[in-house]
Length: 471
Picture 1 (cartoon, helix red, strand yellow):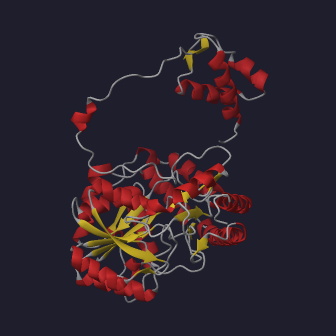
Picture 2: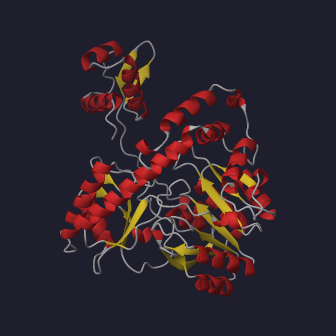
Picture 3: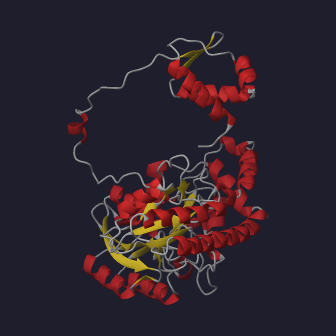
């Protein structure tokens, strides 16, 4: 919990209302300012929190009062069972990456870098400028602002060899985040009941989007060097799938990067079978040791549908992503996006564009690369010292995560619960597998926690596993 003054005051007033009778009057704003040595703005913020929680009632000109206590709801919603019918897909539990972390726990299940690794000063300045501009009354085109689409296309073109025709702004569709993009692509390109190849393990959000779209997943084993191209070929022939969702660079969760020969072989197999490769370039800004060109940079034929997001690298508050697709598939994806969201806020697009076009963006990325390398190496070293039973198959060349195999006989669920009791929130590997996992794994984010917290987290994990006899 953020220990801001308004939150501390809200906690104290929350305790006061718990013991006060309904209708009891709270001290005035002036009195609260004097009693708690805070500003009037802090008092207003704290009272707004309590009002939203239904704990106080404010009567203009009269004061603020303790609200009547309401009993627990006992309404029977059983009638909705027949109205809803069977669930269209199995609803998974809330991902550990999005779950609320108990106070005091070190969060290594985080899906984002910590705020200190983001260009938030640039983001704040960009939002201030944009909200004072005519963009406040603007409606963006369905495909996105021309300037933003041009930047996305230019970013890809800069990594495209001269011999390959580069994508243009006409090939780009702006999305309200990559998760929305995955759903739109799966519905538009694959369709309900149709098969799609997917790496195993893979991004848990892709599994969720596929389930919502009714897509039938065909898992392909993948690791540090990607999938076996021959197995991809066989799976395309056997299943009749016309799409393959993949993360060739810094894959989530294990951080693997496909070598050049695998990239070429998979792309060739997709061409032979008339299939698309849906390339999720989620970690384009998180290269550490090198930054291989995306598959889309070597594909002039429209085989690759590229997904590029700025949410993790710019700010979680700016949920902006884009898909690059050439040929008729572009129109189909655009129609799906229009049906779902109409358009993406021009405020978010212009703010994100200001950040990536600012003079400081390149230096920020260089600093980010150094910071990610430091934290990756620190956590890997600390785990080797304190939790040697965890097997780190390889050191990822980019991304945000380490992927560690639990020792034989160690239950993944038991390990996750033991880590939680030790004060570390971790991501269970089984959520990443569209098929039965071959072993227990933990995914640990090295970018969401300050360096001093990483060593302590490793110590706690080692102690937790030692308590299970897995040291």
